[in-house]
Image (cartoon, rainbow, N blue to C red):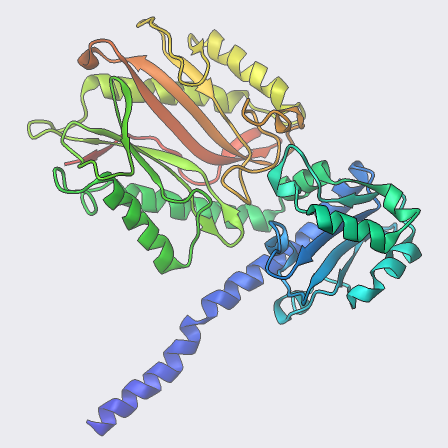
Length: 434
């Protein structure tokens, strides 16, 4: 027995450190992404936005959305990440009043200085336009509190205080223009979210007349907990759709045979968050496949998605892209509608799109082909932008007395010089529960 115990202890000593390396591997991946972003994206976007210095202020226990982008770090009271364009190919990166092993060993930063050097540091570099994180339109770019702004103004004094400008567009550009290493990380997040969603919509998780909508939602939350993942959407939206629209969502409604169920959710892996949907039909006892009306509606949605995907191209504003997408849909025989406003015409499939930015949150801050992003719809689509290709198609269903079936399709893609390309297998089939 003592020999067996000894072997168990030796095994634990050997295996445990190896298993614990997942955290280090994720950190190393984020460091590679961070260095690439600072080297390749930052000079481009700072110069495009004519910002000579970009300042991000953090406070203890109030670090803001850019904290993981920059490599975390700890501050006793407050500190500053400061990026300065001093000419050449590289942007100087300095952390003032911020430290910590993850930040210091990341290889992404040039200088670590005390926060007391802040005013002299800025004065020595003499920036003409200083970007600070204030924004009325984009939450992830609005990181500076009122008192934080006052503190920066008082610390810098004139003439620097008069040179402060909003870095709203800079933050959007920095986050939404991607390097290869982060596109790869986002694709990994997409594949994780796809596999979990499709497993959730299977007989391994759902037992008709027993499992509830919230059972499925909490099953997914448990998988995130087990795998060290996150989500930017809270509890997944698991909902039943019928002739009168959405009947129930993520509650104690029991899943019954004949139900058409959707999931809308996303996974957070590293610093990347997906947004996607899947659809499942629960077979009745005498059925081997979904009814013809539902299958037809799903195929019509796929046809509309192909048109949408084929019409998106870089180099134009998202608003211009929206016009081109709807023109292509109309030419293909689809009817443009407002959100959740289908027509009564049974002969046409109605379509509304919401192809929004995605990436560091389920709804990203880059160019968005979506009316619910009124500022970002004016931004120009660039290669490497990540987009959620989202649409809702409404097709008449004879089995519902002609009422239209709402089929939502959503998967994540990357904008390239060729158009947009999927980052993992998009939804091609109506799932079934037996």
